[in-house]
Length: 210
Image (cartoon, rainbow, N blue to C red; front, top):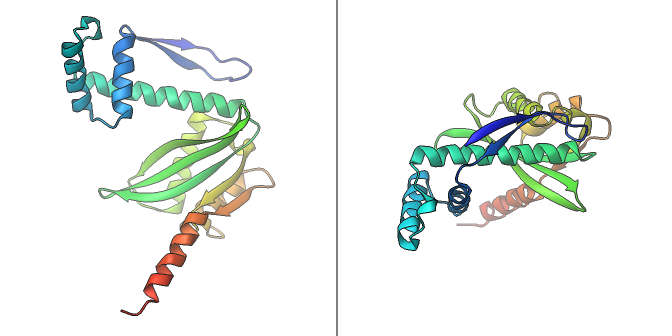
């Protein structure tokens, strides 16, 4: 596999890398196995079994390390595609949510954008927050990620949906408040309906005797 640096154009004025695969069939199979939820080790094993059962030597074999590289390439390709979509659109909104998995805090970010005649909802990143769920850390991490993907995001972001927690919506230091400060006029803030429903259901069940 090889990487070639390509220069941007007027529609997408950023440089990008083009990946040339020596074994496109293997890459396609690995991609499908990863999409199915298999681990790197499982993908490596299933690929070897596929090659043996079908008798197709051209599929080749790969180690867990190679599968890991393919996964990195897939992430980069998806982020590149999202970047290209954002450069071609006049506006977009985001949805932010915080979660903790196996003791590590994550900032989960989705992008909603009108493109090619329909509204798309892209999962951008689940960014690990090693310093915890602090509003400033979340904002700085989000800003760095967006700067890498779409440098003009401050000019075109028009809204943000969040879970309504204080660190997200606080009047002075909240994450959404910080984003609103760097965005253009007309920025819209949305309190996630699913989170509001969850709070109502929690209050309802707590009010039931015994």
